[in-house]
Image (cartoon, rainbow, N blue to C red; front, side, top):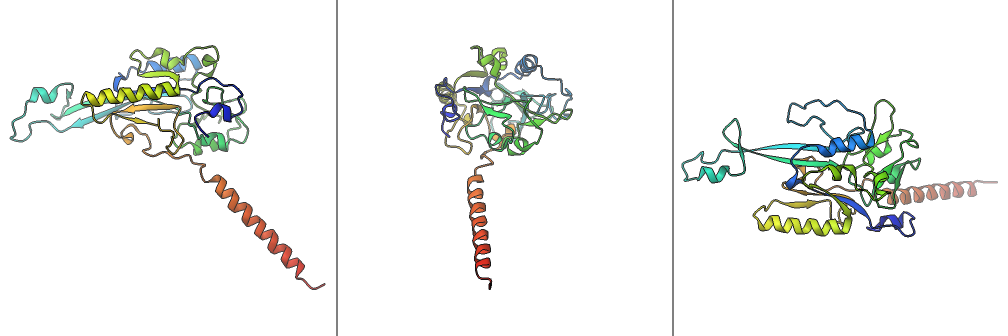
Length: 290
């Protein structure tokens, strides 16, 4: 499946594929996106318990958290710990001193369902609860979901989850109801820094590449894009990110692969094995004395 996912899903004249570009370099961790998502989609509160590891009180994506802002605290050894000549003011610029005398930087990132090009959740859903919209996004129809959980184990990002009270699967819809009337998703609308940008996916990719180039020019050499490549293991994501460190730092898989990629080959092997068994059985009956 190419980037023209809506047409391949059966839409005759779909609009451009829409998506999210989340620029973590300007995320301030305000969680306005989380609140807006919950308010618009009437998502229930899900604990609000501090992890004990950070200031994050929602912990991760789940059935009742469709946008999650991660707080990644990184400690760096204190500059000038040896005898070298170090400008401590220059070393501390833009950083905060930690209690152990080192330096701290915060990496904020608003995570969300990736709306994959090759979406394994679609492949395994037995009821048609999951479907591809005309905007190229992936949506769960909770009134059709039977709670089998196949999509939960199929997602390479661990995004989809079932609610304990009813067993049905839930995840981000990219505010499908808002898209249908020309509105942007609630999380992007609420973001005060434009960290979450919404629009045609191809335009977002161009904008993201330009942003990375500008960051590299400013000396931020660790800036990189995640999920924007149509040649990656999921065919590119409908929601991709600009990161300032390795994906694992943000809790993202470094090389995601659609979990159903081997299904066609498996079915072919199963069919071949079945045909061989039928042929053997037929040969056995044919060879019996009459």
